[in-house]
Image 1: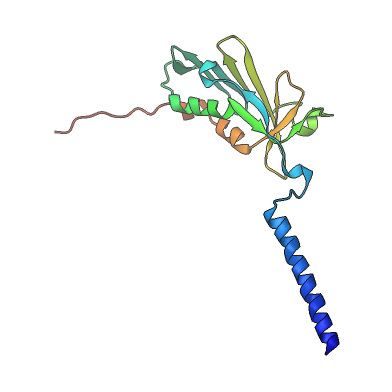
Image 2: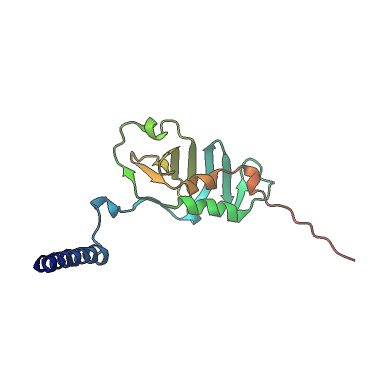
Length: 183
């Protein structure tokens, strides 16, 4: 009977130690690794109101210019453009952040940046341009590789940036509404 009591107390002590360890890990929020808390890096940061032209190259070429506060298709100035759609494009590029920054990439071709699939250029009022080169998609994460012209660093960005720009100029044309009177 003494052996059974001894085993019981040893088992109870082990259970108590396990509960204490679980409590420490759960409630003290100890990081599992140093990589867990990755810092976001600012890739672009400019004001959408400063953009006077927006162009894209690649499979979906767009060419918009802004004059007197109104966006126009530079290829067809008579087309009425949905202003909110162009402004929406700008929200995706004016403040880009990334959790992954490859500061000294060995070979841009491994990211698809030797021949980018898409290039986005935002021309600002002061005459400078922000040029974004979009490379291949990472097959594991689904993120795309991005490089800003003049910066050697390669960043990853979410696929929503790319899918937002995969539109044709016709997608931006404002549909005419018929106005009629009923008798």
